Every structure is written in structure tokens, then in C-alpha cells.
Amino acid sequence: MGPVAMFKKAIQILKHHPLEAVGDKVKKFFKYYAVNRHKMTVLTPSIHAEKYGCEDNRYDLRPFLYNVKWTHQFNQIDSIINSDQDVLTDRPKNPQGID
Image 1 (cartoon, rainbow, N blue to C red):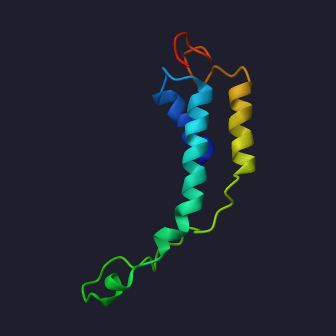
Image 2 (tube, rainbow, N blue to C red):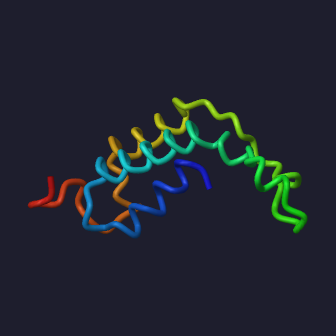
């Protein structure tokens, strides 16, 4: 699930939040995910020294270096927010009382 799919799912779940706030949360999540993904592939020496077979990320084929900007995906999220596609949700773009 990428940023756009997560945004579409999140606006269905978080109906009481404005689209801009949900978009910002998704963008922030994927920005920090990209910044910290490489840390998941490194194991500490103490884990290597153990005899029991722990997960060593040998079969994890996901990429571990991402572009932090996610320009294409974030532009798609912005275009969904700025368009008048209320087909995705059953609520107005900016509900009253929520900043």
C-alpha cells in the first residue's frame, strides 16, 4: 500500500477529519518511513551472536532506500484534495468546527 492508497483508505475511515489534515498525516508518515527504512535492515551484533534463528532480513525483498520527497504520489494526493471528487467520501471537504 503506497501513499495514495493509504490516503484513500484513511479518508474513508477518518470521515470527521478534513481532507487536508488527513493528507498531511499520510505525507508525514511516508516521509519519516522513507527516512528510517534503512534502519530496519541492520541487525545489532548481539542478535548475530545468538544461536537461535531470528529473522535476519535475508528474505525481505522490499527496497530500503526511498526518495524522501515522494513527489509523484504527494502530487496525486494534492490533486485529490483540490479536486471536487466527493465520490470518495460522504462528507464536505471542510467540516465546521474542525481546524
